[in-house]
Length: 295
Image (cartoon, helix red, strand yellow):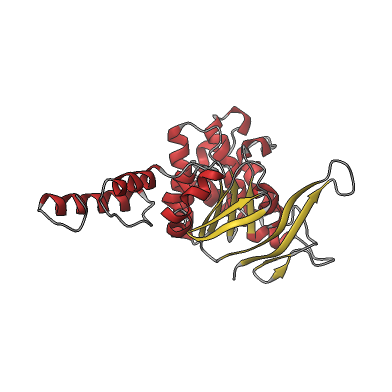
């Protein structure tokens, strides 16, 4: 079952001179097992929206359902929702607090009332998923680790809850290129191999183009566009994306430039591998004297 958001509004500091309307009637659906890119300029309402998806912020007005559970229902325990929806904030290493890696990752499972054996199983599983050796890291202080290792431990703490949905708010912020690639590869593996639905909140459309199946574009607290990645990042939408201050993926820019030169490549190509394959095929056709790709 999906996450469903319907007509969601949210205002910070309501009834005061400092009131700011962050969400203005947002409606969307995040399907089971999908990889969704949530993009938009600073102040678009992305972070406010995702905090509603696991009950950190609770409607009304508007509705949020997670696997059929009404997040805003009066008297509703949010524990079941937060088991299903894991939320990783920007700089998640700032959430570390325990004396050891084991204790930090085990915090969530222990709150579920699991046995010691079940808790240890989940900690081992979560550390393995993020590429950290259980025996080597379990007794170390998280505050002695490198920045990249701290981020992995923080993510492991969320994964130990075995969420069906994993929401990450600018998770690559502050990482070096190698750390960024490793984290994005991990998210893709969780999605494809474990079936975890991933919502990647980012302003990097390059990452979204390569990883996401669906894209939601937000602007001024509203959904400006939503749909398959090739459609939302396709040629017909690129002027609108640029108007929002979003950088069109380099692969898509290459398609546009080659088409200006007469190549007639498909306009919905946004992933690097797809563009490379299309350019190679068109180049072979041109070399063989084909006339279908322009002069």
